[in-house]
Image (cartoon, rainbow over all chains, first blue to last red):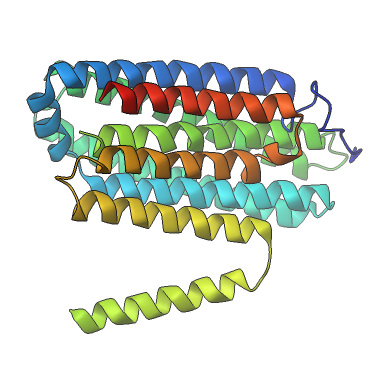
Length: 193
Length: 101
């Protein structure tokens, strides 16, 4: 197994790889601009946005933040252990990180179920158009992240595995990106108006 | 109810203390992230009608964002370009979001 040290101080080798960081910046800017548009329309329709915001379950949102942050913490530990060549322990932390992701999706499903049951859809009002699109795209990222985590975890445990620390760091960077996006989405959607 | 709350606070404080004395930067980062999350929820609940709540919540979110980026994603080890870029992106978004309101 290749455990060569990468010179992260080089501009071309940020932890996770330059391509992953380009993706991360593109995602952050895309979600960020959508949030700016959300706030812009929120000022124009202040009453609607405030009333709709109050209908959201803040406890669900805060709990999901805890799930994602805990999952990110486990992921960071998994990378740390992989660097020390403790692959088995790293794999355990991978699975714990994935558990956090699944808990996030489970709670999000409950939240979506309540909304759909209450007749709230994409065209209920401008607030909910943003709510469904932003949280929906984020959920897709989390699902993709879980697939990447599962695949990487499977690969790293194989005999004569060719999984490198770059692969693990890239996988972790994508997973943490889901945290970063949620850390901006949660306060803006659930608490700001 | 007050006793239950007190016990819960004692339990959480004790758990945090145990966690902190492990002296790992990742543990400390995680504890700070959880504390910021609880603080955000408390502020949003207790001072819902105040005008400063929105910006304060976004500032706390920014701290959490930077903790994840620099500690969990290990951006602290990266080239200055990446550190500066992420901070500038975050500041730009915050200024636009908070400034618009």
